[in-house]
Length: 119
Image (tube, rainbow, N blue to C red; front, side, top):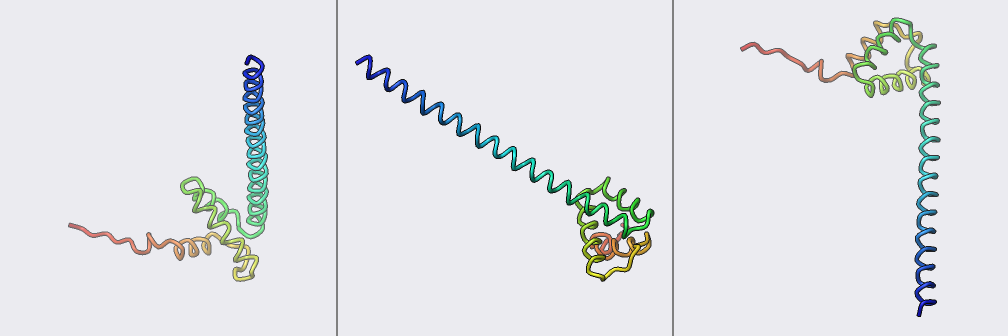
């Protein structure tokens, strides 16, 4: 009877050890995937920034940086849009601050529809 209990206990320990090893392997794989994804995002952002240095004037880049301080997601979408337009040839470069302003007003629906009503 004692041998039976020892065998059961050993089997439970082996199962628990295997479960812990599986969990650690899964965590290590998830961490590795996250690191690879972060490296890809950093590389993509560096490529976009390099292209923007070629496509934008310094004034337009500083305007885009200020937008990024307020709304990072909007600035990222604007950057990707500018790169896509320049690569497809739909936009002449270097993009000046004035043409960037025009693009921003065309993209911004909330500001163009804003109205002030006095009571």
